[in-house]
Amino acid sequence: MQKIRYELDPYNRLILKKTGKKSSLLKFRKVLDGRFKLDKNNELTYHVKSPLYEKTPHQVKLRGKWSLDDNHNLCFTLDKKGRETLGDQITLQGEILDVKKNSLLFAVTTRTKEYKQSFYALDLKGKWTADKFNRLSFHAKKEKGMHDILTLKGAWEINKNHNIVYKYRKAKLTKVKQKTHTLTFKGFWDIKKRMRLHYVLGGGTDSVFSFEAGAGIFKERYIKYELGVRLSGKKEPIKRTVTLYGKWKPTKKSELIFQVKYENKKIHDIVFKAEVEITDRDKIIFKLKNDIGNKDIGATLKLSRKILKGSGEVFMQLLKSPRESAFYAGSAWKW
Image 1 (tube, rainbow, N blue to C red):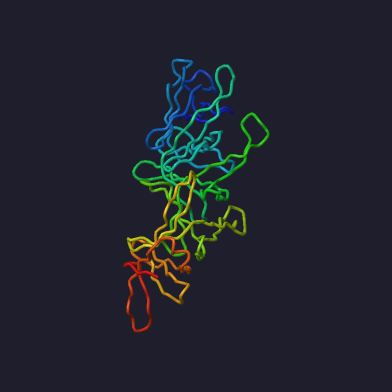
Image 2: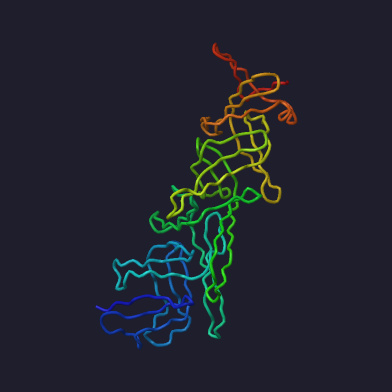
């Protein structure tokens, strides 16, 4: 039985190579000038620009599994099932061009007939999430609710705008000198669970990085979490400190919010419910809970009256208990 082996040349053009019985192609190994395209399920098709011979295919449909290699190239491992092809891996040379809340945009390097280098983009659809090692991963959607996992295997950082930034270095196809590539994930931070820190990539999306972290430190001007990103081959995780700077403000909706300023002075609120205890004339202790389910997040906050006074009235409701006097945000109470 004739089999066709799929390979790529250095410019990401598909090569058909026969194995087994005699091929219907005129030559043993033929480079097909064309481009790859994706369908709605991220399946790959190679569209041939101008078939050279009658038996040359106009397009080649491929089924397989997506991944990223250690050099941040896009890999596609071909399925063997039901095909007359070998289970080869196609590695697309290029760079990750951009990341958005529901996609990963990859620039594929190629060249024209005039031997000039050019590129085109493949836009994989799916969602972003964090793996168990706190690494950034993209789940590329497939048929029947399945997905392929593409993992960014390095450690991420936080920039001055509180955004997650991922950097990697690699050389272009025709150059030896390496270039630093910077990917910025635009979103906002949220805190809903104990020992967890969430980064949401915009509204209306399932793309959320849920990081396992240590206990949070809550102060008058900042919130701080420490966590580790475990990389392959490393014994110890890379430590990361996430410090969110902002200001506290009580609301009329029985909530205590922490306002964080992002890029272009955009403000996003981290919302908490709060059980409150007054310890003296100057300090108030808040036992923080999430705004959904009113569950304890394992954090306390001590604020001075001076910090909250600028917000006007503090909304509290006295709870009478035989053991202690405590308060919940709720009704107007003046100092």
